Amino acid sequence: MNSETVITAENIIKTYKNLKAVDDLSFFVNKSECFGILGPNGAGKTTMMKMLYGKALRDKDSGRINVFGYDPKNNELEIKYLSGIVPQDNNLDDELSVIQNLLIYAKFYGLDCKKSLDRIYELLEFMELSGKKNAKIMHLSGGMKRRLTFVRSLLNNPKLLILDEPTTGLDPQVRHNIWDKIRLLKKDGVTIIITTHYMEEAYQLCDRLILMHKGKKILEGNPVELVNQNIEKYVLEILNHTLFDKIKISKNINIDRTPNRMYLYSQDLKSLEQLSKGLKPGDYYLRQSNLEDLFLKSTGRILNE
Ligand code: ADP
Image (cartoon, rainbow, N blue to C red; front, side, top):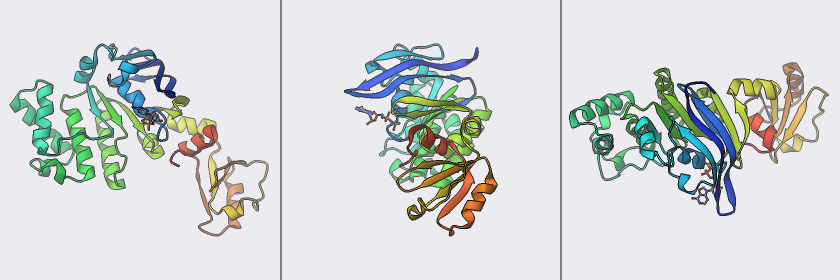
């Protein structure tokens, strides 16, 4: 935490009926950093995110949240004026055009018409949507709708961008395009908090992240450091389950298993290469370890089952 901390969440608990969706979660986000909440579906990421801008807080059980010095429960509007939100569902008005959707939002921020249009054109250019300004929402592709939701979130020049699963369901090309835009916004000093179940997304974008499982934080830190400090450098994945019992494991190798895969971890690449020599292509995959491996090691499960 530093003097320019934008968000603090302390000991947040949120229960739906008998289910603890968020279970004693604490974290902070500093100015101009990209902070990630990574976890599988159902981990509690969206519930936590919504509490940051007020939506779910009415039912919050306990804990304290501070965003720009405000409590979302009492100052939802103040936080929204300073933030841009990309929710999981785009909630655009299908019957209206791109420009009409954006003008409605600009009105909410009290921008006059000329200023609104200047800003809208600038942002449509930034998100590569200028050619679609008069198109109806129903005629846009999934990737275009997502980029438009980004445009909408940026109308008020937000200091904080709240991104809930920003690239879920998009094809890799659109995903990479959106990652590039997020990097540019970060370069401009925008603070970003992002939820994702894509390990690669968190790894590529986040300065710090928490790894969540069943409402709880299981790890926190810089993604590269987390992997370096908590898991062997290399992994040999055995993809053919009939081989699981046939592999001879030496002392310097650690094992994890899921029903369909065996993971052999080691600091020593050579010993894994040696093991893989007896295997057929397609039966194994030799690679560097990543956040997914760390999640498996910590929970016994893989991120995107
Ligand atoms: P994530 O964003 O990580 O996928 P969510 O925060 O959406 O997780 O959900 C966490 C858990 O809370 C899940 O088990 C989900 O089914 C449950 N949940 C989410 N919203 C509600 C709700 N409005 N009512 C009841 N249960 C909910």
